[in-house]
Amino acid sequence: MDGIICIYKPQNFTSFDVVAIVRKLFKTRKVGHGGTLDPMAEGVLPVFLGSATRVVDFQIDNDKEYVAGFRFGVTTNTQDITGEIVSVSDRYISRNKMIFIERKTGEIEQIPPMFSAVQVDGKRLYELARKGEEVERKPRKAIIHSIKVEHYADNEGIMRVNCSKGTYIRTLIHDIGQEFGAGAVMTSLVRTKSGVFTTDDCHKIDDLRELVKREGAEALRGLLMPPDKLFEAYPKAQLDAVQTDFFKNGVRLAADRIRFERIYNGTYRLYGSDRTMVALAQIAEDHSLKIIQRLGAPEVVIENEE
Image (cartoon, rainbow, N blue to C red; front, side, top):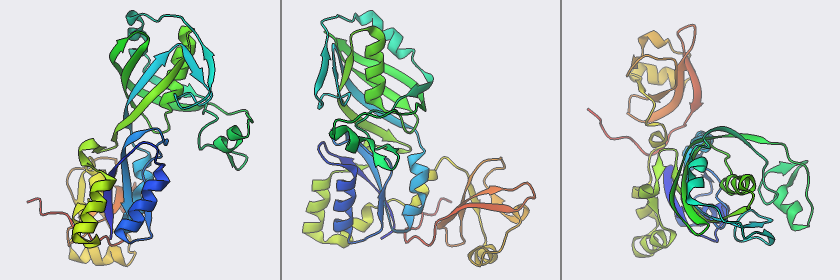
């Protein structure tokens, strides 16, 4: 099977646990996920099967949205509520301070937490942290598009964060707590959006298991989304039958002879004559078609949009 299915990852499951479950349910070996979630986190986890795994990296690069619980007055070694307490403070943070949190947008630098999957000298940081070791980590850039504190009372609250890939929400909360002089810890985390995918697109693991039990693994095919779902913001480029044959044989195509939805300098969804998305492409300076990523021959075909 080829395509994308969005899973609502439950708490206490790793992203790799979900991949293993999907691999077993769909009876396919080629499976990948679009962005790791910590075990304590839940929410949107896009999973890619078959030829759709070729576009996983594009999903990982997309922006994310999270709803996170936070508490002032405590810090832990993991920067979330599951860790060992490092410090406690009775300092009260007023509701008026929330406006300063909501202004923390733009590019920021974060030092990856020790309990993370970042590699240093070939070793995962969480492996070193479990041994009680701490090593120097280089700051990483992230972009905060928006923060909205949706609830706050008695030093605890909930915030909604729109951000770039690679943003550590628990580190964001930890750093805010340090800035306010009280410390802070993340108490919950739900990823509500990952690129174009939201919780509305998600399926629960138990529901998938029940469907397989009731109708067999083949019934899962109808739940798969085509790879072009990931790129629906990009305009289309349509090949005719002759151009499709040339494309399949590796011939460099003249962009001036291809039907584009609109002309611009960015990336296009490229479709073959059978209306299946075959690649991501751009118009090169010499007016040839520059292929960014081939998608192979996925089984899922888009519906006629005419």
